[in-house]
Image (cartoon, rainbow, N blue to C red; front, side, top):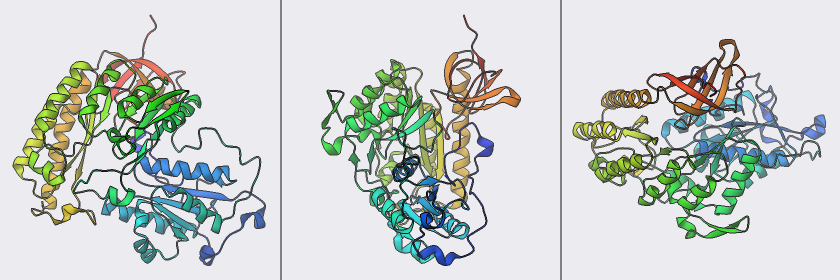
Length: 482
């Protein structure tokens, strides 16, 4: 992949995307003509992939590449080595649209033959107006249309040696973890969001399809599965929780049933994008039993009832606090990650202070924060009470300071414990390894920095003793054998 793959959480200092800069094609007039690589070289055509946006988009990129690999294509990590480049775009925020348009322009300049897909693809006219040289534009999860566009402009060359494909498909993540997308789209209508306009309403996969894919991933060596969707806890509602056969048993397409079945596969199971519906309570005992990681990624977005009402989200945050307390009584190790928006139209200082108090009381372990920005086509654009940019920035900094204090206190309680971690990276020159605990998702959360890491390899599950902590990370050494 040329650009945009999530970097390992361990490599914070190196979280810059490799744009694969190379000498651009000297003749961009080729951009609108089919390019038969086999006729020129007799070799398999090479695809470059630029994947932007969230893990859900990354899974889309993996599916596209898996299909193309099965049809005889190979892949290049730079523009110069690519016969054609696919840019999988993000279109959720206007700033993301700008980044996507910039990436398309760069790919055109560096290579000249570009196919665009992903969320920004729904604005085909905009893309073609800014970049008339693109070969084709398709929308999100339109895998067949992307492949057809590749076929049109870069015909495949069947090759029995190249066409061999691993059973689990191709992935853009390290070998030891993988994203598992269980549904597309969303039935919610939050006022700040245009995801339903881009990706449509909720469409759940049959439970058996999800489970067989997860099983293949585990057999291939995956140690951690990150369950993703737009609304994970709404899984199955669109198909009326229909059952499907998995190894001779009927499994319902329900959030709890799917979580329970995944928990039997012997891998770390991490749940992301979990909307706090009442039935989420039932999955907490699975976390206490060690079947599912004690980690919930819940997009609360705010806490003030007034702001939540304007956002068109559930507003009973006192009840949510009570639920969080009950969750932690059942599973004391539970970590809660969430994102919050500050500066939403109409947000008062009182609303913001309410949010700060709520984050402290809820003890949100991992908090991300965004300054509100208008999204073209979102109903929130019509709301009154625009918050000045300088106020948004000041509130962002205040919230992150509170979140940092909460994180520091929560992590300090883990010092002295012996825990299991999954190793993402090693630094042999420093005799150090960078890992994650069950409380840390890749790329967005903290890390566990292991000293005296002789013999430890990426993908290893290792028992370590925590020796220290800071605002976001734990420090540890390999646990001594009894």
